[in-house]
Length: 96
Image 1: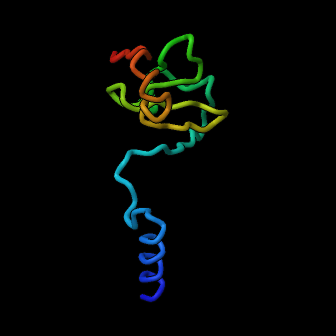
Image 2 (image 1 turned 90 degrees about the horizontal axis):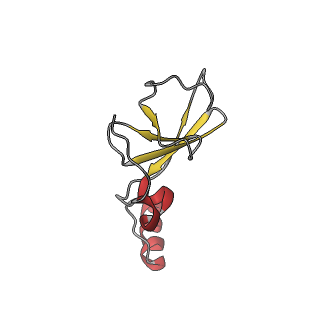
């Protein structure tokens, strides 16, 4: 209990919230038996964004989360975090 009280006091002194932010964040996903060059079409719920953006994929049915493939791991982030709000609106969205 003393530790929790100390953390709350410290966070209030530093001006940071004691509760984690509700802002969506990035996360990593392992590709198990695949790598960036052999992700089967239509699996892993991924769609390649564009031929000009190699190793970049849309995740899910919409165009809100972008994943970057590095070796056998995906780094997935909301598009505004990944590219920034000034660039993300020009990235082509292919819903098919």
